[in-house]
Amino acid sequence: MKKIIFCLVLWACVHSAFSQELEIDSLALQEVNLDLGNPLDTLRASTLISYENLEYIPADETTELIADRLSCLQKKVPLTYNDKTQAFINYFVVKDREYTKMVMRRKDLFFPLFEKYFEKYNLPDELKYLAVIESGLNPKAVSRARAVGLWQFMAGTGSYLKLNHDWYLDDRMDPEKSTEAACKYLSQLYSMFHNWELALAAYNSGPGTVRKAIRRSGYKKSFWEVYPYLPRETRAYVPQYVAIIYAMNYAEEHNIIETAREELLTHDTLRVNKFLHFQTFANLTGTCIEDLQKLNPSVLRSAIPETGKTYVVKIPLHAKLNLQMNRFSILDSASKVGRTELEIIAKKTLGGTYGRESITYTVKSGDVIGLIAERHHVRVEDIRYWNNLSSNLIRSGQRLNIWVLTSKTMAPAKRQEAKTEIITSAQGKIYTVQPGDSLWEISKKFEGLTIEKIKSLNNLKSTKLQPGQKLIVG
Image (cartoon, rainbow, N blue to C red):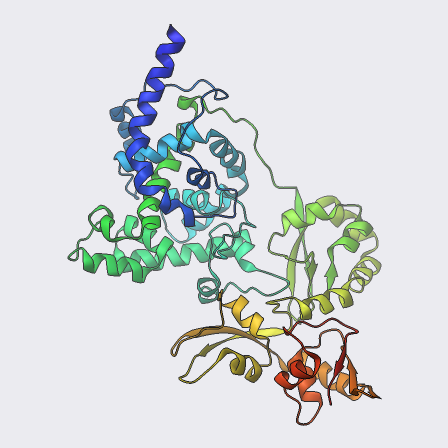
């Protein structure tokens, strides 16, 4: 009988909190961290709750008790309690308790770092929970919209905040650099709105979207007053933030017990200004590449490029001790192995930015994407990738991110041109595709040759090439 009563009470509590809110906000969650394994995505598949495998879940928390608990947690950022907040609290403490456990295991990896920077910028300490909603405390998180890192910066916002990203490295995945950038951005947003809930909404959807909602509301001044005029995703964002703060601070009251904690390896730093191949370095210092990757999440290809800059690499402490015994030989070997192979891959990879620098091009009347690509010595596919375009359609005034070759990386192409060998056959002049070649580069090797002419002569349906491929060029 007690078990039946418990199930009925639990069903009533959860159903009352979820029945209306899921109908309103489940669609809003579809665009939030979709590729991160975020538990909120499971709401799209089903709104039903299975109790068969759940632990004992206390069912006696009243709305008054939860509201009181939130008031005890509140500092500078308002923690408003209402039915929308309650729906997300139910999600974190009932529906997906495993997610709450997961972020509790990870919090000691990053919360001390967050606290250090929030203190430096005189920001509310409780903003550290924002990264839980953004990325699940995963520094390598990448969303479907290509937002990246603990703080989920898009490419444009990252560049604005001086977070560099290229084929080898992405500062948005660097915990320290991205956290400092988040502090700067949150400070700017608060200075715009003078309201932390609106600043959080702007962090999610951009300050322009929030200003528009304020205008449509008749210039109301609080988040909940402009709430109906915000995008669905943003309406859900602030309640999620409040809910995760509650869930992580009152986990034990909901019988969510997680004693395990993930810890960062004991490590030291190494300053390098030459190419460094992680696998070779790991082999020669008696460590494993997985440890190097965990310590350096912003290194995308398990290698540091040689760009003339000095990079700081975190290495396990025992690797540093082994390095001291044979430093020159180890670093010399790690600067040579794998370099050529990675450079070839970098030049051929769709959307690759190796050896390139970013510019912004504003589309003019009459522009087409093919001509823009040819003018900047890039592929159409690259422009589409860099700007998340689903087609070749562009509009006048549109701003495009384009990664162009630097003078240093263009020089080798001229040397290669001198070595170009042409075979004359019955079909005409035959050119053998070299590693790193593109149709644009090949067209420039021969007078009067265009990309379209190469495609026509060879019946090519796309611009993709393979080293060793034979092309008719005349």
